[in-house]
Amino acid sequence: MSKTTEWRKSAKALFDSQFRTRFHYKRTFKDESGELVLLDLMKFVHFSEDLYRPDIGVERYLLGQRSVVLRILAFINMTDDQIQVLSQYKDEPE
View 1 (cartoon, rainbow, N blue to C red):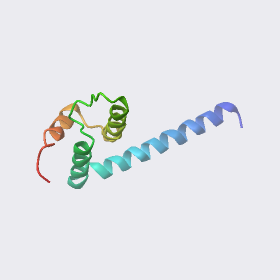
View 2 (spheres, rainbow, N blue to C red):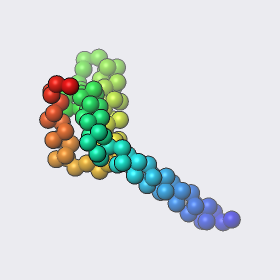
View 3 (cartoon, rainbow, N blue to C red):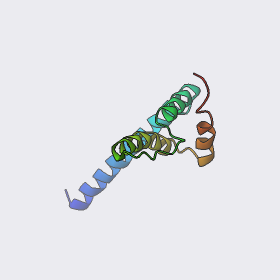
View 4 (cartoon, rainbow, N blue to C red):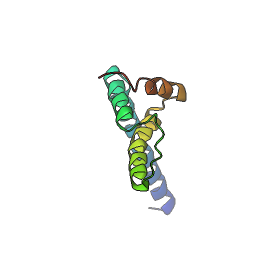
């Protein structure tokens, strides 16, 4: 098998994997239950807050947590407006 053929197979496998992953993220987070879970995660990681902390270790920890929510949002292709709407509910009682 030529290197070009191997590269194409690898690229197709990677694309197929990412496509499947994106499909499952959307399936998980697009209904009402998924949105509630996402909202809870956003509250938990202080998504709408300034994460500056004098202790750089704490700040890095918080940024790491936030990156998980950012990954979810990227996979489900939420717009900035949709993210803003979710962020507004951070203070509602559970």
